Image 1 (cartoon, protein in one colour):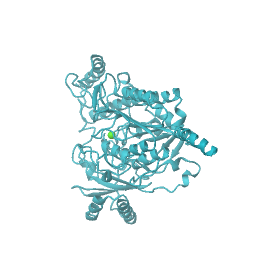
Image 2 (cartoon, rainbow, N blue to C red):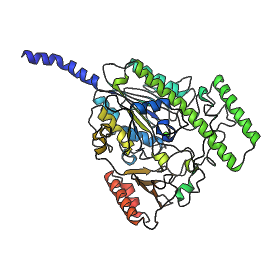
Image 3 (cartoon, rainbow, N blue to C red):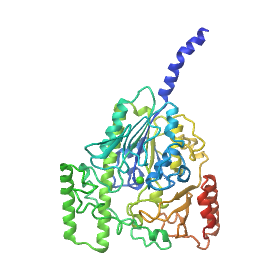
Image 4 (cartoon, rainbow, N blue to C red):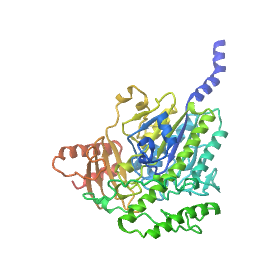
Length: 509
Ligand code: CA
């Protein structure tokens, strides 16, 4: 009896101890941040010391992919662990995100976690399954942005968005219930278009002569969908809004809300560049290359502010003693083109947009400096977070936890997917990228573009990493093509993509 009483008295303490042992999780989620612009991913120009630190202290996934390379849908996949056709959020338009479905945030709450979303969300809805939130409306603004806080109040704050997101994140960490483990998404607007750097980062890369990607002057031969897109640096990128030449600082949507000091600093910086450009009177190739380099300077400088803020958050974790028991994940909602194929933006199944950075620091579990080769997908993010939290992964989620890949020495032997399935939808606006689906293996990629263009593409990533030579239909590829088509059909069936199965059945061969 006595023993029983003691146990009864100890029970709440034991469960408290258990919950305190469960790790906290911070998911830092940027927007359009290309893996190829990160030092840890091999970039020699980018200054990304905080992300490099995270990779050095944790694990870097070399083959992390999204299943539909576009903002809103990737965010819906983050929450649901499901493909777009299963969670209902296929396009970035005014689709309403169905928050009644199973979301990992609700599962975390059921398992005793405190949950928060700070910063960019971009799902046309308010957060569900989060105890606290303070989010940007839609795309949000770089300068003096509005934030929507509970229950639905909009407040405008002075300052730069990446700084404010970090400030609100650390403020919540200060005031959270310290008896419970927490999960927090830190959603960054950077490095989304129009790549507006913080005042202190203007010109950070002005002395760099950015190399022109080898396939910048792609003629899209044999790739009809690529030929018909509208996302080139040459024709689509706007001088005024994107590159800030003669920007409207008075009533423009972008910079009209800047305060006097911000306007003055921006004007002083860009007016000089503008004057220089006018004096040079560039045309043709020289002008296109000027645009590309100007774009890259702004993009990289914007990423400096993002990285500095990630550093501030990591420093906060150090100072507050949270580092040891907090898992930090970094990813972006998809990749981005930095001039490859002549483009900016994303959408295509080609590597630079399908691939996205994924770094995880998990003290005492992940050996510092680990790199992972296996292909992971954004449907794996939700199951991974739940696995870290010790919660059950709901069967409706289509991904799997990536943790087994991190637990050496067995990691290399873990049975893992050999094929990744992709399906993109948004057409024709805004960039005229035909809908398409495809499969990627470690060496090959097969895609079918439909919706009018109706073409197959096949790439050998080993021989042609830039995806320039479509070898579909070439002699000698018959058996490979047959095998990849069978894989595609198998994946569509497994992931229940009924619409794709119908399109595939009617696809020209
Ligand atoms: Ca995005």
